[in-house]
Image: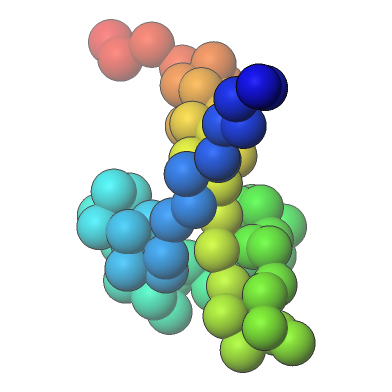
Length: 69
Protein backbone atom coordinates (compact mmCIF):
# COMPACT_ATOMS: atom_id res chain seq x y z
CA UNK A 1 0.00 0.00 0.00
CA UNK A 2 1.45 3.39 -1.01
CA UNK A 3 1.52 6.17 1.58
CA UNK A 4 0.19 9.55 0.60
CA UNK A 5 1.84 12.60 2.10
CA UNK A 6 -0.47 15.52 2.70
CA UNK A 7 0.92 18.98 2.18
CA UNK A 8 0.44 21.28 5.14
CA UNK A 9 -1.62 24.32 4.23
CA UNK A 10 -1.66 27.64 6.06
CA UNK A 11 -4.47 30.12 6.58
CA UNK A 12 -4.20 33.88 6.24
CA UNK A 13 -3.91 34.09 10.03
CA UNK A 14 -1.12 31.49 10.06
CA UNK A 15 0.84 33.43 7.46
CA UNK A 16 0.34 36.86 9.05
CA UNK A 17 1.34 35.53 12.48
CA UNK A 18 4.44 33.83 11.08
CA UNK A 19 5.51 36.97 9.22
CA UNK A 20 4.44 39.42 11.93
CA UNK A 21 2.39 41.54 9.53
CA UNK A 22 -1.27 42.43 9.25
CA UNK A 23 -3.73 41.14 6.67
CA UNK A 24 -3.73 44.46 4.83
CA UNK A 25 0.04 44.32 4.42
CA UNK A 26 -0.07 40.71 3.28
CA UNK A 27 -2.69 41.44 0.62
CA UNK A 28 -0.78 44.55 -0.49
CA UNK A 29 2.33 42.38 -0.94
CA UNK A 30 0.33 39.85 -2.96
CA UNK A 31 -1.12 42.53 -5.24
CA UNK A 32 2.31 44.06 -5.82
CA UNK A 33 3.88 40.68 -6.59
CA UNK A 34 6.08 40.78 -3.49
CA UNK A 35 4.44 37.68 -1.95
CA UNK A 36 3.08 34.53 -3.65
CA UNK A 37 -0.60 34.32 -4.46
CA UNK A 38 -2.56 31.80 -2.41
CA UNK A 39 -4.23 28.64 -3.62
CA UNK A 40 -7.98 29.25 -4.04
CA UNK A 41 -10.33 26.59 -2.73
CA UNK A 42 -14.11 26.31 -2.53
CA UNK A 43 -14.70 28.56 -5.50
CA UNK A 44 -12.32 31.22 -4.23
CA UNK A 45 -13.99 31.66 -0.85
CA UNK A 46 -11.09 29.96 0.91
CA UNK A 47 -7.41 30.71 0.34
CA UNK A 48 -4.39 28.83 1.61
CA UNK A 49 -0.63 28.72 1.13
CA UNK A 50 1.47 25.60 1.39
CA UNK A 51 4.12 25.60 4.11
CA UNK A 52 6.67 24.87 1.37
CA UNK A 53 5.68 28.06 -0.48
CA UNK A 54 6.10 30.16 2.66
CA UNK A 55 9.44 28.55 3.51
CA UNK A 56 10.73 29.08 -0.03
CA UNK A 57 9.70 32.74 0.05
CA UNK A 58 11.39 33.23 3.43
CA UNK A 59 14.60 31.61 2.10
CA UNK A 60 14.54 33.90 -0.93
CA UNK A 61 14.13 36.93 1.35
CA UNK A 62 17.12 35.85 3.44
CA UNK A 63 19.23 35.34 0.32
CA UNK A 64 18.56 38.88 -0.90
CA UNK A 65 19.33 40.58 2.43
CA UNK A 66 22.38 42.78 2.61
CA UNK A 67 24.58 42.08 5.63
CA UNK A 68 24.18 44.48 8.56
CA UNK A 69 27.10 46.82 9.14
